[in-house]
Every structure is written in structure tokens, then in C-alpha cells.
Length: 337
Image (cartoon, rainbow, N blue to C red; front, side, top):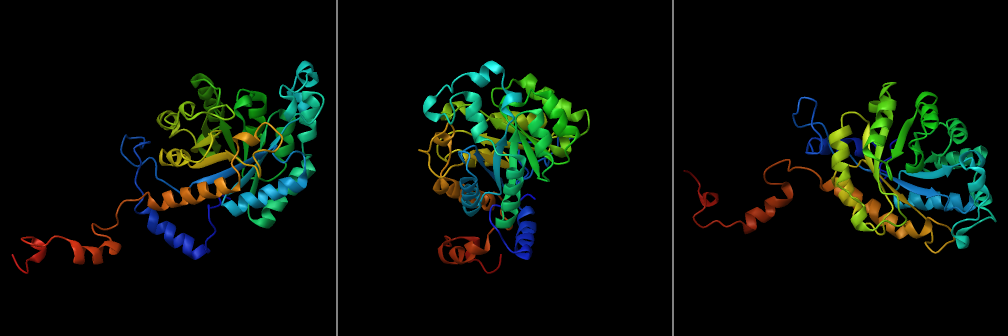
């Protein structure tokens, strides 16, 4: 399910959510079909902790990272699934890893094979997530992996930026899988994004199942290259054509994730590790538990803050108004007019 960042009792969460929604602003980011305000309303952001291959091929580390992500407040722990011999050319498979210090094998193919979990291991992680209270998800990189992962009844599967033009795989996710499909758009042209959305629209699956992520493909990405206002463009183009708009960040720190949420991203995905000095490509661009926990905390605080006043003078202001408001010559001091 779409887990909240923090766990509340059912009655408290529903009551507070109902009251909050009445004050939630209709964002300028998206309009209704007739041009009127009301196409978009803020809702609590869902955080995806992208563990990816930061488990270094070890199930105990994968489970520990899931526990840590859950404790931080993330709703989902996401992994990756590849069939290296299908995904890579023979030349790519047999070449050395481009960064030998990050390699887990003599060739890039052997490196990738070392980091892969089997279908049974991924199902074990899905079941483990259910036990501890965090949802499992994964990205798929090829047709075989997609067909394997759709056998696990998860809420969504992710298409990485590198594979969003792999329409044979997209067809499997669109036509053979019932869950949502999340697609990153790093290193992707506007025409390529449009082609993905149209592909899902062919089967009326875009508005109900497709989530598009603003993303820049780099590890790490400097702030000037995040290009966060692309979220505005994505809303202008696709706000009424896809299910949701999201943000996947590869930057350092947590300063700008709140901006992504305020600009309308309903999902925030960040790479996650226990120790950024561990061996591997993604650790350096990942958040550690302290960072992920603070980001989840700040996103929840921002969700609570993004509202209009329910009354002109709030209850919390009444005592201060009675004590501090200027009264000389003011109508506040008048008994009758």
C-alpha cells in the first residue's frame, strides 16, 4: 500500500487526514481540464529508499538496510534486478569494470552477477518487508527480470532511466503486470518521455498506473544540474495524463528534496546505504540513516505545514492576539459602533 511516512493509529490518521485535506491548497502546478484551479492537491509524500545493489550481494546486509530504512520513516525499500547476460553485450560482459576498486568480479559481467539476488531471494525480501512494516519494490533492467519480478505481488516496479526506451520490457510491465509502473527520466529527451507516456496510453494504463520521475543521471549530481523546475514542466505536460509525478535524486544532502515535494512530487526516491565509504558505485551518492531519517522528518513536517488557515485567526493565535494586538484607537477596543 501507499504507506505514510510515520505510523499512526487508523482512526487518528483518517481523522487528521480528512481535516487536513480541507485546508490543502490547490497548487498552481496543475489545472483541471477546464482550466480551473483544482487539478492538484498536496498529499503526504512517499519516500523510497533505493538500496539498489548497496547490499553488496549479501542478504543479511539487504535486510539490515530494509530495517534501517523502515526506522527512518521510508515507505518502500527498493532493489534492482538484472539478467546480466541478457542486458549486456558480450563485449560489455567480458570487459573489466571501469572502476576496478568498485569491482566484485574480474569482468563487468562477473561483477554484475555477484551482486544479483535470485527470484527466491527477492521474494524473501518482499516477505521480510511485510514482517517489519516496509514495502519491497525493485527496478527491472531487462525482459527476463521483468517477467521474474512481476511474479511478486508488489505495489510497483521501477524502470530506470537507462531502460526507459526498452519497449519490449515496458510491454511486459504494461500488459502482464497489474501494479503501477514508475519510470525515471534521466538522460532522456522530451520526445522519449512522450513516447513512454503514449505507449501506456495505448492501453489506457498511463492515468491509472504510470508514475513519471524527474531525474538527472549522475553520481553524485551537483545542485546546478538537478533542474528541479522540470517538475513544473512535467506537470504542465503530464499532470492530467499520468497517475503521479515524482523525483529521484542523486545529489548530496537533503536540502532540495523539500523543494521537490513543494513543487508537487508525491514520491521522493533517494539512494540509501549504511556507510557511504563501503565498496561500490552508488554508496557515495547515497544517504546514510541519519540523513534519510532527517529527510523523512522534514517531509512530514512540510506536509503538515502546506495548508491554508482554517480560520482567519487560529486558535493558537487567540491568546497572543488578546495579549499583544495593538488596541489604542482600534475597533478591537470598541464595545459598540
